Length: 363
Image (cartoon, rainbow, N blue to C red; front, side):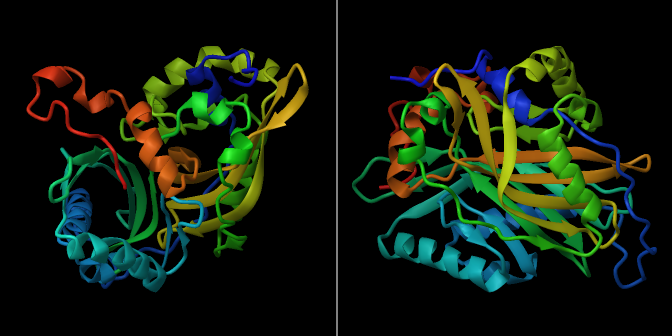
């Protein structure tokens, strides 16, 4: 039995987290030196790095990724404890996940059309979004296929390197709002409060984004590369202008909804070397009114990416996710992604070569 729902559609409920904002002026940064100045084909190089990441995972060789990450890279994975704040910790986790796959004689294939990449005006930082199709082949067992949501932020320092990464699977609103979900779902690990130099405005902006819902829609960038990801599979909004057109009519309703959001872990923040983009990570708890009184859901993780536009910070990426234990990923996925949006216009499942393939990520 589902718990009482807020008086909003799933899309509107998702939009509540994505509304509200503040104007803030990014700090000025010195021009890059000859050693740190990136080449003009930054977008292509970031795309190549993402592809390299996929190929290293496919070949079960995470050691090939050491020079693609900063020493202090921060990453959020699928599980409640999957928070990593250093390159050694992240690479060790990848080894622990990938080595057993090779020992069992299994293979991984990662297919993707092309990641959505945006580059800061000074070409010293960038960010991307992708939903690759992951196929796991197991001897004498059905194929497994799933489509994670992946967002990341990169900085240029004699080469492009990831400094923030978020990988997630969606959780349906039915699961999130169900009675007792706060007991079945697990709160994620606290990312701790770590504010990098010059991040005061980013942290302040993030807090006001959560506190003030009325103007954030206006502070979201209009760029086509903007992506705002909620916890549900349907909550992937691509294109800033398109999102704002959808969200503006919901602002008045949002003010009356009784929703509130609070940071329950973090924030952890970092400013890119050029000072023209930065990110914030935090755990966020959502509270809303029910006939029995306020109800607070299990906290979700969020990675916000902001970029400088015309002297002001603009939201260019937001990625929310609910932490899932391995057994929850297995049972939830077939219901969470019945039809993936990138498949629109393709043959129906019954007509495809992969018809009948099991769509489950883990044993």
